Amino acid sequence: TVDGSELKTAKGMLMGKLGREDVIMNGDISAEPTNYEILTLYFENSEGSALSTEIREVQVNPNLPVERYIVEQVIAGPEDKSLRSTVPYDTKIRDISTADGSVEFVNKQLGLEKDALAAVYSIVNSLCEIEDVTKVQFLIEGEKLDSYRNVIDLSKPVEPNYDIQF
Image (tube, rainbow, N blue to C red; front, side, top):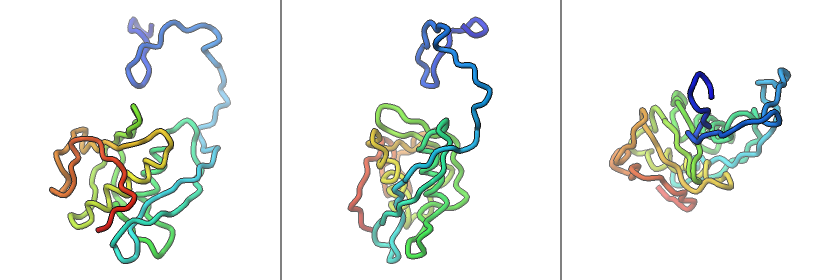
């Protein structure tokens, strides 16, 4: 217990009894990124008619979820000048978590009405490139929306659409 309460994981599950072998004392763990991940990111093509991929190698901290890096990179926009950004650069990520093959995150804003599909599917398709992720649940200020700009249903997790046309 910690302060009289049973110890739980980040997902709320009880940890159970811990032994000496479960505790690692190492003050040398760095908070700095130490690994590289190759990410497949989705951005709007130059005509604005579909999504195209951009492969990017990103330095990551293995103690943080790769999902956060993916969404940060989508927000940062494409490096390829022939592609267009789908999510406003000032979008803030409040939280990202993975559970049961789906990713949930809170996003301050998703973009203009005409770009709603590009914004949503650029994030969903990019996150679903992770092996165990099959769908994404969007939360805005911690709440599910019925729809985004009356264009796409966000009341339930969104599955990827790799053939989407605008």
